[in-house]
Length: 342
Image 1 (cartoon, helix red, strand yellow):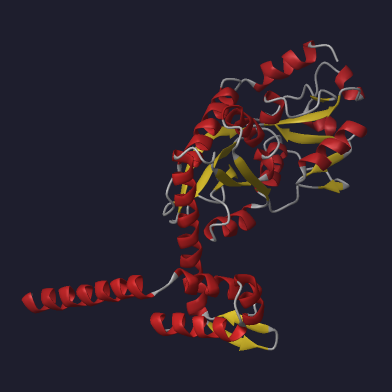
Image 2 (cartoon, one colour):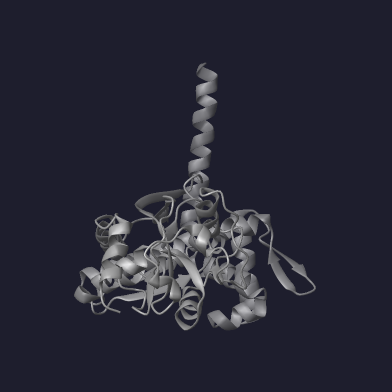
């Protein structure tokens, strides 16, 4: 028992000494060179990017590999590419520089030199209403805030999050939440409505069933997406087959453009209507739909610190979500729309 305890203590002490040695010896310049070589796939291009010569960049890489005790790149016909050790260390390097940038932002913000910066990934359903509303609330009190927003599917955004290129994802939580490195927060349950242009003949009917729309022209999301699954469930719960369509898109502007300019109909999330993100030329149809809901919320890395501007953005998101949650009765909302003048 004593021997096992001693061996374990000795191993931990050796492990600690290795970490301490790396902290003393590894230089940020070396980590930057490794990251730039991986990004460009070329030692020469990396040298030019960091303002040094190719021999100097080669020596810097060799120094980093010697300190880490592993070969980080292998040469190929099209340049260099990371080894399995390189791939592992690159994730850590991304985290290190992300935290350094965050620290600089925090200090500058506290000194009053900057309003900070924020990088956000947005899934299509959250892009039109939720995120713009939350940012608008922030910008009203933070005129010098710089926010970078990119839109994409969950797989792309999760990759960007793990590489520390974005700080938070806003969107559906169905594909996340089960992964140990992610921290999620549900904001509200998104429901669907079916909408058409205000002059569409269907608006003249007082009541519609989903079955009445099967032969209409539809704009639908792509299969194998969470948005499509929710739309498909809407038809499945009413014992109907999802209609065929000519337009398949996850682009909210394309969806809006097709519906506003023609007799196409489409399934929309309710929240953009509630937040005024849909033009008044498009209105929900009086269709009674089954209650299909999908959770919308925030996705972050558990290991990432929560800088002040990100905390403020998350608070703004919660406030907007409360507005949406206060209008849960979608049918009352649609009746109010139908009663309003066109």
